[in-house]
Every structure is written in C-alpha cells, then in structure tokens.
Image 1: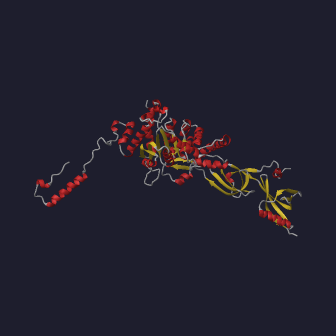
Image 2: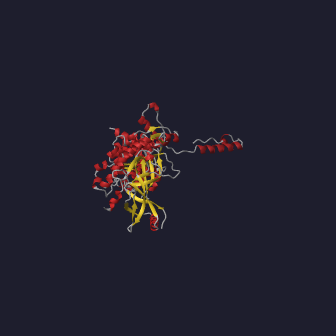
Image 3: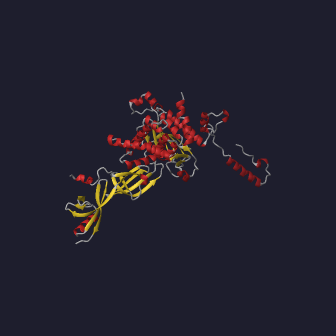
Length: 381
Length: 159
C-alpha cells in the first residue's frame, strides 16, 4: 500500500488549507482503492474464445463457461447435464445397511444411472428444437417426457404438413384472411389442422370402440403412445417415444387442437373417456419409484411442464439435478419465472442438488447444450 | 296388430323419411336430424377453418315431438339428414276413455291410432271443444315414422 507523503514531512510551512485538501484526497484514495481480497485460485478467470485459433466449434462452446453472463450459465448447465449422464450408483460410496443384495452388487451399481425428466413447451416443438428432442428420444437418452397439448400435436402435424418461417411483424388480420396462424415468427396454415383432424378422428373412433368392446381405459399417456404408433414416422419424437417405451405425460390434454378434436368427436360419437387420475399415479410413480437412481430435470420453458415435473420430484423429496432454460423472471412471483432455489424451498429440488438456470431462449441454448452433452457422449468411441 | 306397429302404419312404404343437405345450407327455422330425432333448428353458428380443423356449423335444435333441446357440431361441408315433416289436418270424431282419439280422414275412413297430445293445454282444448259439441280440427305432425297432434282448431258453432 502506497501512502502519499504527508505534506508536513516535506514542507512544514504549507498553508492549513492545502493540508486539509491532501488529507481528504488520501481518504478518498483509500476508499476508492479499498484493499481487495485476492480471487486468484478461488474463482475462474474470465476469458473468451480466441478466434486466432480458427473456428473450432467444440472449443468455442467450451469457452462459454468463462465468457460470463448467460454464456457461463450455459457452460454450467452443460456441466450439470454431463454430471447427470456420468453418475452411477457405484459413485455413492456409502451403501445403506437395509438395501437389497442386488443393490450391494458392484456390477449392478455400475449399471444404475440417473433418471432424466425432460419437459418442454409447445412453441419449442413448433420450432426446430423438435428435431433435437426427437434425437434424444430416438436414442433413449431421457426417461420421462412432460409437455403441453401443443407440444404433442405440433410434432404430429409436422408429419402431415410443414411449419414455415414467417416474421413476428406480420399483421394478424391479414394472416387470418389468408388462413395462416402465427406462432412467433413461424406460420402454420389452417389446412395443416384440417389434415390433423382428418387423421385423428378415425383414430378416436377406433379408441372408443376398444374402450367399449375391450374395456380399455384411456389416459393421456396411453392416448399419446397410440398416436405415436399411428403416426409411424421417424421424424416424430412421439413415434420414437412409443418405440422406446418412454412415457409422455400431458395432463392438460384438452388445451389445444387435440382438445378441439376431442370436443368435436364427442358430438359425433360421445363416450370416449380419458382418465387423468391413472396418469398422475404413473407420473408421480416415476419419481417415487426411481430410487436408488438419482433424478435429473431438464426443463425448457415454464408453465405446466415445469411445474408438473418439479411437483412429481417433490414426492421423492427432491430432484438431484435441475437445469432450467427459460426467459421467465421471478419478480412477478410466477412459477414459470422461479429459480431453482425457490423449488428447493418446496422440497422439489434437494438442498444438495446441482442446479442451473439459463436465462435464454431455448432455441439457442438447447441445441448447443445437447451438442456438448448427449450428442458428444454418444459420438465418442 | 301390436302397439309398436302403429307408429309405422301411416308412413308410405318405400318413401324415405329424410333427405341429405349440406350442413352449411341448413338455416335457423329449418329441420335437422340429431341423434336420430327430428328437430327444428333454433340456432346456427359457424366457426371458420382454424386450429380446430375444418369450418364447422354448431346447431342448437328442439326435438319436434319431445321439445328437448339437442346440440350438434358438424363440418360445414358435411351432409346432414333433414327430416320430412308433414302436417295434415283431421276432424276430431271421438275421444275414447283410454286416451285414444278417433279422426276423420279425407277418404271418409277413421284414424284411431293417435293418443291425446301430451301437452295439457292442447289436450284440454280438444276435450272442452269436443264436449261442447263444436267441430274440432286437429293438425297432426308426422316425421320419421312418428306422429303427434301438434295443434287444435275449433271450427264451427256448438250446440
């Protein structure tokens, strides 16, 4: 620390006013340049990607961790997801006394992995993120899916007719007159929904028949498995969920075009029953009976999928890993904008859990995250 | 002859009871078949093609015999069944103790298979007019094999 020489040492004959000024100056100096704690070795240094090494995408993505702000959050989210993927029961060194013989067997413990819940909102399925989701489901990289009705029908409709790129600024009344529906800067023609209606109504007829003749009691997840089977198209994540036996939960099934179809179908031939009670048993069961596996949540967006997954994990005293990617803010008290720490207060996430929230549109963050986690692990020899 | 056959006696054998019409062309005041019942349309609203699929017509209608309200939603390009509804006037000849009425047909014969209408006002009007010796003419509405007295007129003086 450098102290400026006090004037009195040099020149005892300085006027009093100058001495006063110097004293104030030295006090301000020591306030502004307050002695700081060294962060060396405690915190990571901020360092961005150096393009002088060329355009190397994996290195570019890895540099995000030390770039700061949401890039760092994304980097941390990548870390947490990789931890989810790497964890094995064998990593837990304390073996409880009361566990079964099987659970004590080391090779069994090596095989037990983290159970991953994936949740997303319907706008993401309208976007190209649907194809990233399809990749994860196709290779059984997630265990349970929760989404909204739009998150289901947009995937099915894309197999019948495409969604197009438009613009946020296209005027609503003009679009209505052209029979075009806007989702952000995407456009879905009305005709796509007509095709969906033509495709799904006969399936409902058949399902009603099976309900009456074979006593099948349909639930949203059973219905979605059936639709995945019927669409029979490899570009659909619902198709792969059916093939891989991954349950897709959609407790709000009536809130979308699919719900409109159920409504109209009930006029033509009434009686189709869809039981949500069975599904809440199944969903919560996925969390409750996950033990000895750890559970991890990857949630894109807010709303119903976010809460439904967190709530189910509350039933097992909290998830062990949580990654939220959304643009919600907590100042309005909404659940959509709530940070993982709020969920900890509810017991939806464990106090000891590894959690990250990335404040980012998932169309940017999620494909990059998958590139550095699921996809790179799969392509490694 | 058993009771059940009475309903179909008066229909022409071979003539169809309904005819098809495009849902988009059925208006308020027209007729439509909903769940097999002949109904009069009291409300039509059309929703344009959209997220719910093809354009649809929402019908609210009243069963012409039971006055129950029925609803249906049909794609507007779909065909619906429209019932033939006929009204024929007959003169009242007799009201029997078990509630059946005897009517004079055009050809001079009698039609005895109809009961008094379930509507109390109509029924009372028929009975009082008949007892006073007035000429009572009833309108019989028939559709899809079912018949019912739907209106009563007193014609002519009494004793």
